[in-house]
Amino acid sequence: MYDWFDKLGIQADRFEYLGTPDTRPSRLIRAAPRILLAELELRKLPPMLENQTVLMSRSASPFSSGRIESLLLESAHHSVYDFDDAIYLGSRSWHERIWSGKKAWKRSVESADVVIAGSDVLGEAASRLRSDVRIIPSCVEPSNYLQKTSYKIQDQPRAIWIGSPATERFLTDLTDVLLALNLRHGLRLSVISSGNADLGALNAIVDRSDWDPKAYAGQLASADVGLMPLPDNDFTRGKCSYKLLQYGAAGLPVVGTPVGGNEVAIRRLGGLAPTTRGEWREALESIIEMSALERLALGNSGRAGVERHYSFDAWRTEWLRAMNLSPSRVMNVSQGEQETCVE
Image (cartoon, rainbow, N blue to C red; front, side, top):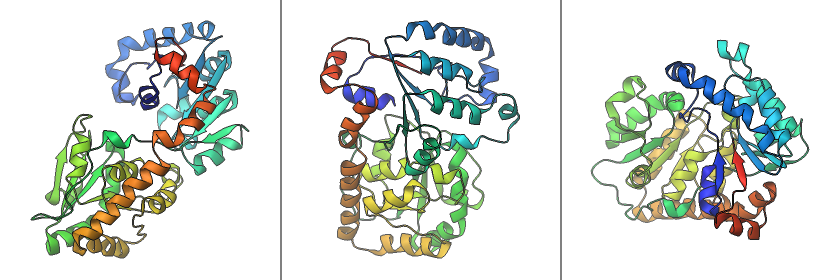
């Protein structure tokens, strides 16, 4: 969401609750002294929003079942609710039983003037509650990514995965495949994440890097292929393929399970879409064994697909319409006028 503001030069008042990367219970406990202040600040906002555009992402408070979200969105001159995960499914945690994220999502969708959903699957869920739903995929800025230049495999082929600690476990579904390719071709797996999950037998071939906003783009370009394995369930069908877009922006050949948004993204990026472990091995081995020119062609296809279908430039007009902003208005905002209050 903030990437849009940076791209278009929009100045915005930002409310980030605690300013933490997430609001998991363990993190909330550590930040407990600041929670009351955050809740009080939230409740000061509605009277200030009468002439403002509000863009809310996911939720405003982890201690809400939708009341504060609804109040903020309905208080604004124009309100937009943006989500890019299947948060309408809720969770089985004790926290969900007290403060329902599922209910908060429902009330947010019902209260917003416009809903932005990151995929067709998410858009279909929102459309059951709100008529004005815009499908705008997660976007990347290709120029922010160092594009791969050499497609000759060095001593060891290298696959790469980037993502959150919560989804590292998806890699273990490919344990047998990746270990077999290590034995035959020396394949190594780079994992870029802020976590350090135990990946079992895969640990022997994994090289970890902490996620660093200044370094990850260059790290992607050093690999030979980008991976996005997914199980097939209600949650993963709501995923918006952001990993694939990052790989494509870096000029990597991409391989991903065709679940949810991946199915369309892989086709647009010219990638490979295996569905079984056997197909995964065949797909990765074919990329390892093909010529450098063939890998270059796959990389160029991915980069072109990102530029055409998933870049900020490609979706600029539609995003401005959803926000009820004209291009000339954005120019005024970028020169210093406050326009948008962000939740």
